[in-house]
Image 1 (spheres, rainbow, N blue to C red):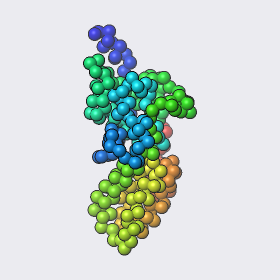
Image 2: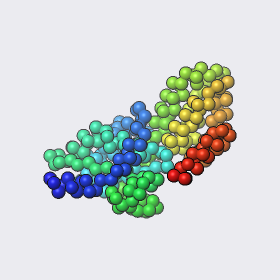
Image 3: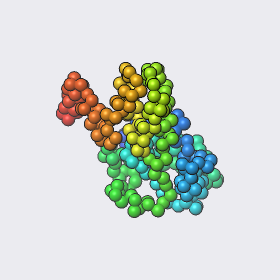
Image 4: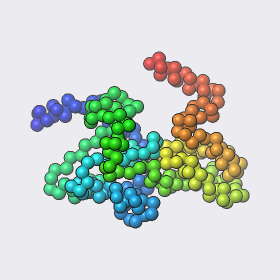
Length: 254
Protein backbone atom coordinates (compact mmCIF):
# COMPACT_ATOMS: atom_id res chain seq x y z
CA UNK A 1 0.00 0.00 0.00
CA UNK A 2 2.90 2.35 0.73
CA UNK A 3 4.36 1.77 -2.73
CA UNK A 4 0.93 2.18 -4.32
CA UNK A 5 0.36 5.50 -2.54
CA UNK A 6 3.82 6.67 -3.56
CA UNK A 7 3.21 5.85 -7.22
CA UNK A 8 -0.18 7.59 -7.24
CA UNK A 9 1.36 10.71 -5.70
CA UNK A 10 4.25 10.60 -8.18
CA UNK A 11 2.03 10.81 -11.26
CA UNK A 12 -0.24 13.57 -9.92
CA UNK A 13 0.17 17.17 -11.02
CA UNK A 14 -1.58 20.30 -9.78
CA UNK A 15 -3.56 21.08 -12.96
CA UNK A 16 -4.71 17.54 -13.75
CA UNK A 17 -8.38 18.26 -12.98
CA UNK A 18 -8.47 21.91 -14.12
CA UNK A 19 -9.88 21.17 -17.57
CA UNK A 20 -12.63 18.84 -16.36
CA UNK A 21 -13.72 21.29 -13.67
CA UNK A 22 -13.84 24.16 -16.18
CA UNK A 23 -16.01 22.26 -18.68
CA UNK A 24 -19.60 23.49 -18.78
CA UNK A 25 -22.15 21.17 -17.16
CA UNK A 26 -24.68 19.93 -19.71
CA UNK A 27 -27.86 22.00 -19.90
CA UNK A 28 -31.04 20.38 -18.56
CA UNK A 29 -32.39 17.56 -20.78
CA UNK A 30 -29.55 17.84 -23.30
CA UNK A 31 -27.43 14.81 -24.26
CA UNK A 32 -29.96 12.41 -22.71
CA UNK A 33 -30.25 10.76 -26.13
CA UNK A 34 -26.77 9.26 -25.73
CA UNK A 35 -28.23 6.49 -23.52
CA UNK A 36 -31.65 6.19 -25.15
CA UNK A 37 -32.71 2.99 -26.93
CA UNK A 38 -36.04 4.41 -28.12
CA UNK A 39 -36.26 4.41 -31.95
CA UNK A 40 -35.74 7.90 -33.33
CA UNK A 41 -35.34 8.79 -37.03
CA UNK A 42 -32.69 11.41 -36.18
CA UNK A 43 -30.51 8.89 -34.34
CA UNK A 44 -31.48 5.73 -36.24
CA UNK A 45 -28.20 5.10 -38.06
CA UNK A 46 -26.11 5.92 -35.03
CA UNK A 47 -28.25 3.81 -32.66
CA UNK A 48 -28.13 0.75 -34.89
CA UNK A 49 -24.40 0.78 -35.61
CA UNK A 50 -22.61 2.87 -32.99
CA UNK A 51 -24.68 2.78 -29.79
CA UNK A 52 -22.61 3.94 -26.82
CA UNK A 53 -24.76 1.89 -24.44
CA UNK A 54 -24.08 -1.24 -26.47
CA UNK A 55 -20.35 -0.52 -26.55
CA UNK A 56 -20.15 0.06 -22.79
CA UNK A 57 -21.88 -3.16 -21.75
CA UNK A 58 -20.57 -5.45 -24.51
CA UNK A 59 -16.85 -4.84 -24.44
CA UNK A 60 -16.02 -8.28 -25.79
CA UNK A 61 -17.86 -7.47 -29.01
CA UNK A 62 -16.74 -3.84 -29.28
CA UNK A 63 -13.00 -3.74 -28.67
CA UNK A 64 -10.94 -0.61 -29.11
CA UNK A 65 -11.82 3.04 -28.67
CA UNK A 66 -15.23 4.65 -28.94
CA UNK A 67 -14.43 7.83 -30.82
CA UNK A 68 -16.58 10.89 -30.14
CA UNK A 69 -15.69 13.54 -32.68
CA UNK A 70 -17.19 16.86 -33.76
CA UNK A 71 -16.55 20.41 -34.81
CA UNK A 72 -14.80 22.82 -32.46
CA UNK A 73 -17.39 24.11 -30.02
CA UNK A 74 -19.90 21.34 -30.73
CA UNK A 75 -19.90 20.22 -27.08
CA UNK A 76 -17.51 17.24 -27.01
CA UNK A 77 -16.00 18.08 -23.62
CA UNK A 78 -19.42 18.81 -22.12
CA UNK A 79 -20.71 15.48 -23.44
CA UNK A 80 -17.70 13.63 -21.98
CA UNK A 81 -18.25 15.20 -18.55
CA UNK A 82 -21.92 14.24 -18.81
CA UNK A 83 -21.09 10.62 -19.70
CA UNK A 84 -18.27 10.24 -17.17
CA UNK A 85 -20.47 11.23 -14.23
CA UNK A 86 -23.75 9.70 -15.37
CA UNK A 87 -25.13 6.83 -13.29
CA UNK A 88 -26.08 4.95 -16.47
CA UNK A 89 -22.41 4.76 -17.48
CA UNK A 90 -21.52 2.95 -14.26
CA UNK A 91 -24.55 0.69 -14.54
CA UNK A 92 -23.67 -0.39 -18.08
CA UNK A 93 -20.01 -0.95 -17.22
CA UNK A 94 -20.92 -3.05 -14.19
CA UNK A 95 -23.01 -5.32 -16.41
CA UNK A 96 -19.89 -5.73 -18.58
CA UNK A 97 -17.46 -6.27 -15.68
CA UNK A 98 -19.66 -8.82 -13.88
CA UNK A 99 -17.92 -9.65 -10.60
CA UNK A 100 -14.58 -8.09 -11.52
CA UNK A 101 -13.40 -4.87 -9.90
CA UNK A 102 -14.37 -1.86 -12.03
CA UNK A 103 -11.82 0.95 -12.37
CA UNK A 104 -12.65 4.16 -14.24
CA UNK A 105 -9.84 6.40 -15.51
CA UNK A 106 -10.38 9.75 -17.16
CA UNK A 107 -8.06 12.40 -18.57
CA UNK A 108 -9.04 15.59 -20.39
CA UNK A 109 -6.45 16.53 -22.96
CA UNK A 110 -6.58 20.24 -23.72
CA UNK A 111 -4.41 21.58 -26.50
CA UNK A 112 -4.86 25.17 -25.24
CA UNK A 113 -4.09 24.29 -21.62
CA UNK A 114 -0.91 23.76 -19.65
CA UNK A 115 1.99 21.64 -20.89
CA UNK A 116 0.80 18.68 -18.83
CA UNK A 117 -2.78 18.94 -20.11
CA UNK A 118 -1.69 18.71 -23.72
CA UNK A 119 1.32 16.40 -23.54
CA UNK A 120 2.22 12.73 -22.96
CA UNK A 121 1.63 12.91 -19.21
CA UNK A 122 -1.52 10.80 -19.35
CA UNK A 123 -1.71 9.03 -22.71
CA UNK A 124 0.24 8.77 -25.95
CA UNK A 125 -0.24 11.90 -28.04
CA UNK A 126 -0.67 11.97 -31.93
CA UNK A 127 -1.12 15.01 -34.25
CA UNK A 128 -4.85 15.69 -34.83
CA UNK A 129 -4.58 14.68 -38.48
CA UNK A 130 -3.70 11.10 -37.49
CA UNK A 131 -6.85 10.49 -35.45
CA UNK A 132 -9.12 9.61 -38.36
CA UNK A 133 -6.93 6.90 -39.95
CA UNK A 134 -6.22 5.51 -36.47
CA UNK A 135 -9.79 5.43 -35.15
CA UNK A 136 -11.92 5.86 -38.28
CA UNK A 137 -13.15 2.26 -38.27
CA UNK A 138 -14.01 2.28 -34.55
CA UNK A 139 -17.55 2.78 -33.26
CA UNK A 140 -18.29 6.41 -32.48
CA UNK A 141 -20.35 9.43 -33.43
CA UNK A 142 -20.18 12.84 -35.11
CA UNK A 143 -21.52 15.03 -32.33
CA UNK A 144 -22.45 18.05 -34.45
CA UNK A 145 -24.81 15.84 -36.46
CA UNK A 146 -26.83 14.79 -33.40
CA UNK A 147 -27.36 17.90 -31.26
CA UNK A 148 -29.91 19.91 -33.28
CA UNK A 149 -32.75 18.97 -30.92
CA UNK A 150 -30.64 19.90 -27.87
CA UNK A 151 -29.82 23.30 -29.38
CA UNK A 152 -33.47 23.95 -30.20
CA UNK A 153 -34.39 23.13 -26.61
CA UNK A 154 -31.65 25.40 -25.20
CA UNK A 155 -32.55 28.34 -27.47
CA UNK A 156 -36.29 28.04 -26.91
CA UNK A 157 -35.91 27.88 -23.12
CA UNK A 158 -33.68 30.94 -22.95
CA UNK A 159 -35.53 33.17 -25.41
CA UNK A 160 -39.06 32.26 -24.34
CA UNK A 161 -38.04 32.35 -20.68
CA UNK A 162 -36.63 35.87 -20.85
CA UNK A 163 -39.22 38.42 -19.63
CA UNK A 164 -38.05 41.16 -22.01
CA UNK A 165 -37.89 38.97 -25.12
CA UNK A 166 -41.29 37.42 -24.38
CA UNK A 167 -42.85 40.91 -24.35
CA UNK A 168 -41.45 41.95 -27.74
CA UNK A 169 -44.43 42.82 -29.97
CA UNK A 170 -44.80 40.79 -33.16
CA UNK A 171 -47.16 41.04 -36.09
CA UNK A 172 -45.48 38.21 -37.95
CA UNK A 173 -46.01 34.88 -36.21
CA UNK A 174 -43.96 33.06 -38.83
CA UNK A 175 -40.96 35.31 -38.18
CA UNK A 176 -41.28 34.62 -34.45
CA UNK A 177 -41.42 30.84 -34.90
CA UNK A 178 -38.56 30.87 -37.40
CA UNK A 179 -36.20 32.81 -35.11
CA UNK A 180 -35.19 29.77 -33.04
CA UNK A 181 -34.81 27.58 -36.13
CA UNK A 182 -32.70 30.26 -37.80
CA UNK A 183 -30.33 30.43 -34.82
CA UNK A 184 -29.83 26.66 -34.73
CA UNK A 185 -29.42 26.38 -38.50
CA UNK A 186 -26.80 29.16 -38.54
CA UNK A 187 -24.85 27.35 -35.80
CA UNK A 188 -24.28 24.37 -38.11
CA UNK A 189 -23.78 21.99 -35.21
CA UNK A 190 -21.59 24.28 -33.06
CA UNK A 191 -23.29 24.43 -29.66
CA UNK A 192 -20.90 27.10 -28.38
CA UNK A 193 -22.06 29.42 -31.19
CA UNK A 194 -25.67 29.00 -30.06
CA UNK A 195 -24.79 29.75 -26.44
CA UNK A 196 -22.80 32.89 -27.28
CA UNK A 197 -25.33 34.28 -29.77
CA UNK A 198 -28.33 33.65 -27.50
CA UNK A 199 -26.50 35.45 -24.68
CA UNK A 200 -25.75 38.32 -27.08
CA UNK A 201 -29.40 38.59 -28.14
CA UNK A 202 -30.52 38.67 -24.52
CA UNK A 203 -27.95 41.33 -23.57
CA UNK A 204 -28.97 43.59 -26.48
CA UNK A 205 -32.60 43.99 -25.33
CA UNK A 206 -34.84 46.99 -26.13
CA UNK A 207 -36.23 45.41 -29.31
CA UNK A 208 -39.06 47.22 -31.06
CA UNK A 209 -40.26 44.07 -32.78
CA UNK A 210 -39.31 40.55 -33.78
CA UNK A 211 -37.88 41.92 -37.03
CA UNK A 212 -35.25 43.79 -35.02
CA UNK A 213 -34.10 40.58 -33.32
CA UNK A 214 -33.73 38.97 -36.75
CA UNK A 215 -31.79 42.02 -37.90
CA UNK A 216 -29.42 41.91 -34.94
CA UNK A 217 -28.99 38.14 -35.31
CA UNK A 218 -27.84 38.69 -38.89
CA UNK A 219 -24.93 40.80 -37.66
CA UNK A 220 -23.32 37.81 -35.93
CA UNK A 221 -20.76 35.92 -38.08
CA UNK A 222 -21.43 32.19 -38.40
CA UNK A 223 -17.74 31.28 -38.14
CA UNK A 224 -16.70 30.87 -34.49
CA UNK A 225 -13.38 32.74 -34.83
CA UNK A 226 -15.09 35.61 -36.64
CA UNK A 227 -17.73 35.67 -33.89
CA UNK A 228 -15.04 36.16 -31.24
CA UNK A 229 -13.59 39.00 -33.29
CA UNK A 230 -17.04 40.54 -33.58
CA UNK A 231 -17.58 40.45 -29.83
CA UNK A 232 -14.11 41.75 -28.97
CA UNK A 233 -13.79 44.52 -31.55
CA UNK A 234 -16.57 45.04 -34.09
CA UNK A 235 -19.47 45.40 -31.66
CA UNK A 236 -17.49 46.93 -28.80
CA UNK A 237 -17.59 50.60 -27.89
CA UNK A 238 -14.39 52.66 -27.83
CA UNK A 239 -14.29 52.38 -24.05
CA UNK A 240 -14.71 48.60 -24.14
CA UNK A 241 -11.97 48.29 -26.75
CA UNK A 242 -9.64 50.38 -24.58
CA UNK A 243 -10.33 48.17 -21.55
CA UNK A 244 -9.73 45.01 -23.63
CA UNK A 245 -6.46 46.48 -24.93
CA UNK A 246 -5.25 47.18 -21.41
CA UNK A 247 -6.17 43.68 -20.26
CA UNK A 248 -4.27 42.08 -23.14
CA UNK A 249 -1.24 44.27 -22.41
CA UNK A 250 -1.32 43.24 -18.73
CA UNK A 251 -1.54 39.56 -19.67
CA UNK A 252 1.35 39.93 -22.14
CA UNK A 253 3.46 41.73 -19.52
CA UNK A 254 2.71 39.02 -16.94
